[in-house]
Length: 164
Length: 99
Image (cartoon, rainbow over all chains, first blue to last red; front, side):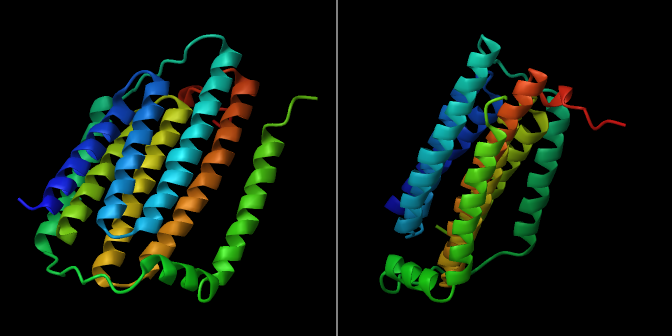
């Protein structure tokens, strides 16, 4: 057992356990907290793949941004409805069957086509390479992203405006 | 770790998310399932990018993360509007478009 495989195993256990908790917990609020945990575990996986910048982005945007927005939405809807929202699930067996069948199919494909690719050594500063690529080759999608954010901001404000 | 290990983990995460999307009644719960599925795809992209030595996967993940944040913001705004109008966030009761 190397340190790498121990880290990967630990992250995988935390990730899968918290993901299962997200889809199985009755309390919606706990569900969001477990989602935050699984997002942090994903950031750890990004770190293990030498993508430090992406791990930081994951923590900032996902674990920080998304979780805050969802908690906010739950608090607002609970205040409007006046009591705690519990959520139930339906058709558990059918859902389990379909998801399980998909997993088996994917794993069967992996088994039939084994990937023997080796991990190349890290070449240079990845964060610097990402920054240079974002402002040269990918500058158009980068700017379009700013437009998308503006549209999302205006759209969310418009949808959530107070009744008149 | 091998590429296979990362892909297997991502496949499991994706299936858990799919399970959540199919079984949850609450609209916010469905959104959380979609988050898990997107997360699994991001792991795949970064793993492929790292093992092929190509930066493209990481750049793409950067964009998908950003777009997901915008999607969640608009999605939750829609959920709040639905709640105001229909007084419920249960996906089974949202059948206005049923013929």
